[in-house]
Length: 412
Ligand SMILES: Nc1ncnc2c1ncn2[C@@H]1O[C@H](COP(=O)(O)OP(=O)(O)OP(=O)(O)O)[C@@H](O)[C@H]1O
Ligand SMILES: O=C(O)[C@@H](O)C(=O)CO
Image (cartoon, rainbow, N blue to C red; front, side):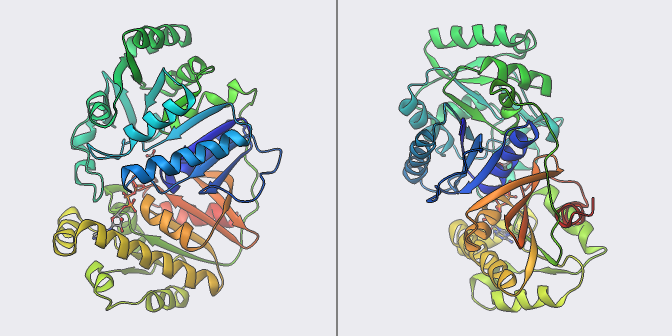
């Protein structure tokens, strides 16, 4: 392998793998650190961790273990993938993990760039925008686990990292790879180690990618990977896929605005069942009950706990944030496991943490990357009889669940 990637959640890892595969790199996503050898033709490996919201020391330890494994596979450059909305708390994991990886690799100019213009995430003057809104005004301020209350990525990173945080402004980025390289050097000379790089358009990310050719460590959203395959001599090419027949289900624990719209849309033409969080947490609703309901429905039945911020807040006030999340994630993992044991072949999930729990619950070790369903969401093959789509909370068109099913089944 050439490019070694560490993703802090599962949907985000598939988002990154999608970008690399589209760029022509033979890419595989691993659930945690694999125990079996990797086929020799794999050029980029994404180790998907569920480390976004776990204690800092665990996130650091898991990321360093992933780095060691990727190094042992021969990788020469490393990418730490986090969310394009920089999901973390003030004392969250992005800074400490980036610090630890930078120390381990002796990396002193570390790009920090969560931009993903294809989904409306841009960085200007060090501030992260989602479409025309600042990050902290776009709905992310209500995120159930990582409420983002500040759009200044330089400031947010400074809370988390022990190293100086610098900035490469858009005007420099617009001048191309050489100018970016010079600015990274100048920022480094000023004593900064993590360098927030503005990026507004895909063109910017391609130039940043070129400038990053010789850097051991890059951090960011999937957009930062746009320019990397070319550095390894790869060229964009269509991704192969064989559709999967059989029965589909959809599961959503994402409470994002986009997912709630997709759930509401799906309810207009498909069987949907709302999961009441308190019923799950207090043991009144079993995974078997919901699995049997899903199995009894035609089309693409959807079970969801997706709820408005006020409802989520009330659940968290009553039961605690962690307890609610753990109970719901475990519940969806159990539902998915029962469904797959009983013959489901296509599983569509929404929400990073939720998808992570489901992938772990299904013991999916290696995911082969298929074609893109919507920006940032590829079809994935888990085995000869199981395909999945893992949707990040804020991604996907209104009719995502139908679209995903069509791509997974090979109908488009
Ligand atoms: N009704 C609910 N009440 C309280 N918590 C909920 C409810 N529904 C889901 N949750 C929890 O909220 C969290 C949602 O996070 P998840 O990562 O799955 O979605 P997301 O944040 O929208 O996605 P992403 O991380 O990809 O942006 C999960 O831990 C989930 O279990
Ligand atoms: O970068 C993103 O927005 C996604 O890949 C993700 O990580 C959401 O969980």
